[in-house]
Image (cartoon, rainbow over all chains, first blue to last red; front, side, top):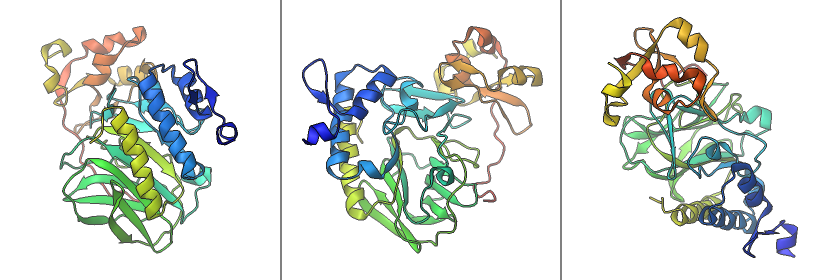
Length: 258
Length: 84
């Protein structure tokens, strides 16, 4: 019943992929069973933990081309990334040249209908480099929603409000989640563990197209390789931890975990 | 200096110099499938593209970018806190 209600389609080898995995495979023309199996496991985990209904967009950055890495796993028809500038696409993810390489997601939180106080986003960085970078989101559009993995010794984190520096950081690799579930503050997680709860009033839902490997409005792309990015409704601490475990399992299966 | 004169380790040091006319030719065009040119202005308002765009270009209409002269990249100052 579970498999039937979640649209598992039997593949040629006799196993079963979810409908999302199958659609993604068709769109990207990826046939690598390691990749598809890892995505399928990830999707089943989203479903069983009730996280799939919270995801607006998930970018697993698999395959080795701009084409395979542009697709939104949750809905291949929407929020496809437009890549421009100098970018390297490889089996370990996507890397801007730090000069002009950006990924425009065509995801506008206001247009999508994101709630002011239920909003999360994040990325999986494979690069530990204490150099300034702006890695996802936007700094324009009435409010800021962004993650900068290094800025003067801190993370830069904003969520439907003004900018904020976190307390001092030590590493820029890992899975970072920026999640707001109340109007008074939002939480910044690294690898499923709360790094800091940031007192920051929400003001207005960001009204701009968000970027990956950069942040809209800043002008300087990231210098950190990204192996995953997402936009979702707000996630609780428990959900952030569960989500990290699913993403880390995905990365480990693809032999690109940090 | 040309693309063939530099090593991959030097890719982040150099950019390809465009004329305004060349910039207009490539804006909005793909250099490879699902990869668009993104000319930007450097500190001196020169129009430039990255070594990656030059090296990875497989669009036969724009392979001429591989022959662009190279200059050292000097970026414009970044304001990390632009008006919202």
